Length: 297
Length: 251
Image (cartoon, rainbow over all chains, first blue to last red; front, top):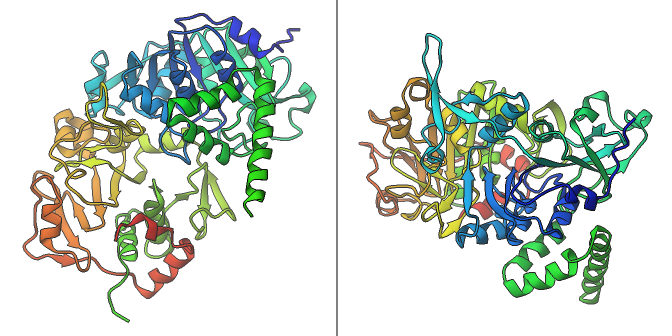
């Protein structure tokens, strides 16, 4: 019986520069942030990143690790625009931006997970997506309607990160929040070997139905190669029902990103050590904010 | 007391009116005024509309914007939203940073896409929305930098481009309404160029024309946007008790 429990460092050590990495979650919701933070500490670069983008994309852009970015948006949800992504796009530091419709991303991952070369859709046709992605092509329905449809190419991933509420050590994983997003497709589109699930709690297999119904068990162990215990691992994004978004910290992140100097201070404090140091600093930061608030009363 | 209704309430009613006649479909509002419009329509003249909490649930009852006391009537995670879009049983009201004469819209970036002057959200689901389900827009500030001859990136497909694609998309393409702080607009013209439908109370034709960077189709007789009925006013106060709608409008 395989025990797949590993550390975030072990997961990152299996990656190589130039790989295609898919990151689950959506915007600033249930993002595998501890794995992203571990990746920031590595020398890995020249990545192709596929994401319904949030601070994962922002941080990887700020660290100069992104060669190619496949996205439909990058947003922090409660704060609409992601500051590092904006800076990167406006200064042209993402060498190959690939901007698709949200549904195209889903189709590309689904095609890859089904081992199909493409899937047809209408989403994208007539839009600027066709103008800025000249390699996208259409296909005519072979049936009587002969409709011209966009053939979304499969997007195979070399590595995938998703964050779940619960997992067992064998890789069965559970989401307890309102939305799986497309996490199952990110794992499905990924070659076996580097499909990583971080989880708030590692629990015994027989406990998987204690907190949620069987409907929450959409990730099974055949889809997973490594399990990482990561309490508060989605911070500062949402991880319902374990915790909501840390809005105050997200705002501090955005404020820090406005200026290279303030960003240096922020990243030195929070992102230069390992995950336990990050979590420690977050607690300290909260205490400081609270003390400052009380002092001004 | 004057009889002139508050502009924010006129706009809320105009947004709600966009969904009139839609029946049992998903009325999706991206933004405070858009959500208020959808919920107002359901609370009054369009009771079968499906409304989401903006997260993952269909909600029954008149949930205030930002309210958490939800009566859940269904589950609509993102994957189901995408399915509903492709199935066409949805009418979304989005925002737009730019819009042109044929309803091409842009929420992605300002300036050249390759290296934008201002990176905004990205195209999001705009391309899929506009070729699959009915789409309307709420634009809080009607000005020439928004109502432009050509948008910098087409995140939402307009009538001229839909016509070029042809087939299913051209036949079913359905941009309904554009609501701004100055008036209400639609595309019910022979070539689907944007047309003025009503002016909000106190707004002149000149205000609209001088703040629009392309030629609008103007009606022979200009009508004025209506204010809320007593029932609608009551519903607005239930759905937006905090007056969030007032912050949406530069009045």
